Image: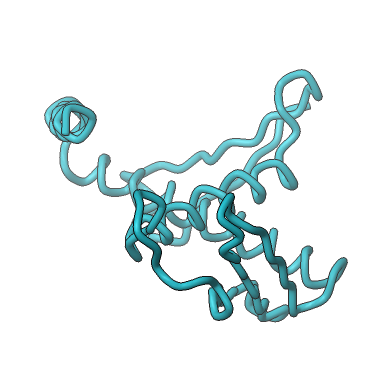
Length: 147
């Protein structure tokens, strides 16, 4: 709860300091960049490993966690299917849907960043630049790299 309160306070400060238009512009830019990076990751993954990926791992009690990822190589979209995963058990290891979605989001964002970004030690940084006053089109973002 404390993290949510801090996050909420920080977003309010952004609106106060930069205004509604600029803050929303950059929020959209961040989401678009994340989506584009993730779709690129899945297109590359499909080209290298195919469009149908499967894995199974097991909990300490032997219950399977099965995952099939089906990738649309054209759009970079992906479907995550947990069919074949064990039933709920008595204990504290069951996961509600929201937590499973958060875990997928975390894994995908970590994987896509690792495949598409060289960190500072590689001397390449990528960032978005945009002018919220002049770039009214929500897709008018320029991607730049510095060597």
